[in-house]
Amino acid sequence: MARVKPIHHDERLSLVDHLGELRSRLFLSVLAFFVAFALTSWQNHFVLQVMNKPLPEGLDPITLGPAEPFYTTITNSAYAAILIALPVILYQIYAFVLPAFSPQERRVALPLLLLIPVLFIAGVCFCYFIVLNPAMEFLLSFNSDEFRIEIRARDYYSFVTMIMLAMGLGFQIPVGILAATRIGLVTPEKLRKSRGYAIVGIAVLASLLPTIDPVTLLLEMVPLILLYELSIQLARFFGKPSESDLDVPDVASAEGS
Image (cartoon, rainbow, N blue to C red; front, side, top):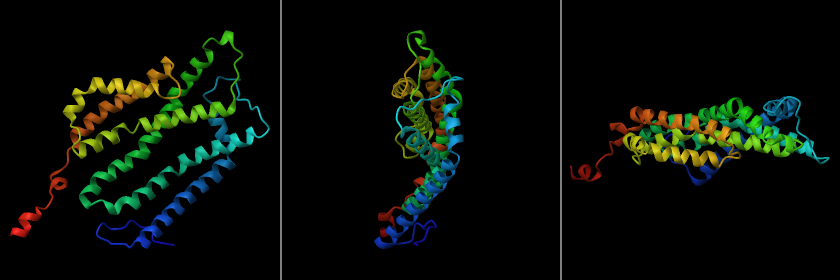
């Protein structure tokens, strides 16, 4: 198997070596997923209990086909396995692209890459513990006297998974803003002046999520706005490139000397 340790920026590898390293890192990522998938498949009852917890008491998802219980269980186990294996997968991606960064760029990229899984998991947890319960109560009680409320398992689990995934991605706002400030696209001053446009954009983003009821929309918008404000403060302290990051040797002067 090819090497799996991070390569130094100054090292030069052939195309075959790069392909070998890529194969090794893909293998480790797939292996991490299948190990996690074996665990979640073994504990599939626990996974389904966790997914069913946001539902009102006494309301259980129903299935409408003979194979639906099996496929639904496997799908939910796979989603849980991806979440568990995500840190390993992200590390393999980071280690593969790391040689492309110079030492100065690496000091910028590393904190941002480490923030990605942390913020993603934070967004998923916020959605599960804060958003889903009131969202389900509102949606299932809306005009409940006019309907016989039943929930199909496949539709419910798809809804929950999509909204948690969307919140996990939405929590990446600080990473995007810090990256933009580090490369000079925006400044903290511009971010403060554009606060109104950002709130409108966040409202549009929240409305594009799987549910647009007012309760869920508000619960989704509040943390995203707070993350935007936090990003402005982080950009003030960490967003400006340091002198070492901007210090690029002057080739012309070096040749002239």
